[in-house]
Image 1 (cartoon, helix red, strand yellow):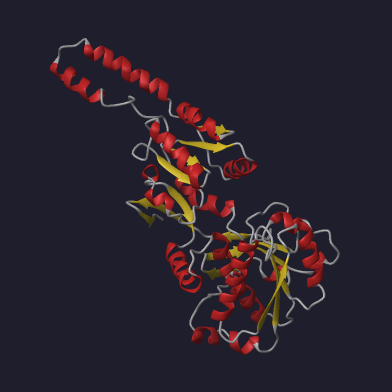
Image 2 (image 1 turned 30 degrees about the vertical axis):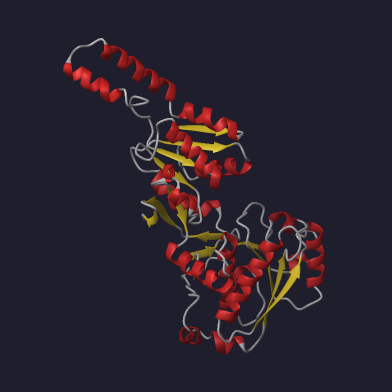
Length: 386
């Protein structure tokens, strides 16, 4: 199938050449949003709404109306918002944000009559009329598959016992990514003993002590010099693997890698690989996370969006706002290509698009496949390595 590229966020003249301004005047695009504008998650919902409004402001001469519906951060509120939405002419729905809220309306009357674009990265059991637009685990695995499949490099898996980590492991194994050993922990207290086991610390430490004991009984000058060196060490020899994959985030990721460092295995000995960290600045200043590798969107695009949000909202951009930024231009580009002005799932499938998150396409299973880059923390900066 011929690949079609829609380029977003271009200059006004380019938008005109694509026919955005001319065609959008023919028929209004009415987008309904189901968002948590009040309640526990109102900060997230209002941030996403502001992102939608910002992209609309930046697209010139588009005939688009955004109609927000508040789901009050609850399942019941989501049902009520969906009922309210049906009283108006809506061409497509953005939201709900959370999977549990989406599931609360899939059996409600008229649900199947609408096309939904969800910002979630959940791709399990998607209804036929729902598109999952988030950056899912599949896209991330494809980004680092080659790195973890390098010849002559043994890799271990080190993660918790949650269903998320189990899902990640299963998907990696389906991609033929092999692990020499797998280590799992159920709580924070288990991280240290599990890392101690994974690093063979006790055996390596004992091997060092045995060697020191032998050298202490020698009067050979070479042995005396070697003894002085060994007495500065904590273990002898390295580990049997070259890579460690850790599906963790934030403080948990820092804790795991720090324990590896504590037990004498660090970025000088092995490569640490993890999931998308969204350019979290914390990992730049944590010494144990030097050289860590993760997949993500274009860092240049991330910086541009972050600067835009600082200028407009005096805040750093969040993960979900990055995803939300591409949705309105995606809908407008497809709408302006259509003659019948009725959205269907087929309008999105198997076409490539280009947005701020990079190049992506919606596959036959209704979820986005994002082409991500690999980044590594190097001397306090994020460096693209692919």
